[in-house]
Image 1 (spheres, rainbow, N blue to C red):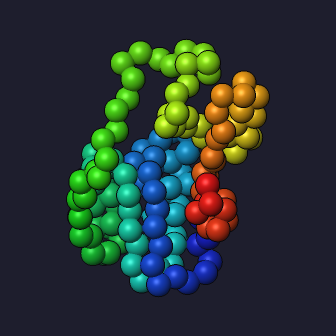
Image 2 (image 1 turned 45 degrees about the vertical axis):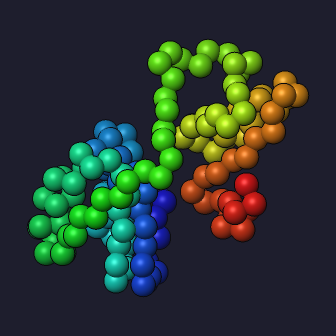
Amino acid sequence: MADVVSDYDCAVIDEIQMLGCKTRGFSFTRALLGICANELHLCGDPAAVPLIQQILQVTGDDVKVQSYERLSPLVPLNVPLGSFSNIQTGDCIVTFSRHAIYRLKKAIESRGKHLCSIVYGSLPPETRTRQ
């Protein structure tokens, strides 16, 4: 949950396209409209830009769209991974609950082939860097 009480010089909202999600969009909309920051960076799918511009036009906020190129290729599989026994070094597993992250890490590491790093939003920055 975004802190909409504190003041920030700069804040970042990642995965901003989620404001269009039926089940979690309210959280991203709350963050977009409620975070008290001099500068707010929004990261996500460019398809969300028109909606963001429309929302922020109502508030009178200035919007500057800055696009960046991916520095390394993202190569999705053509078919589902299937079993965790198919995981290879360098693979990334994405889940949307902290409980599931730890459960999957334990399941993957219990096979003895791979060690896992985990990253999630409220993970302390020092730990995130070590991961």
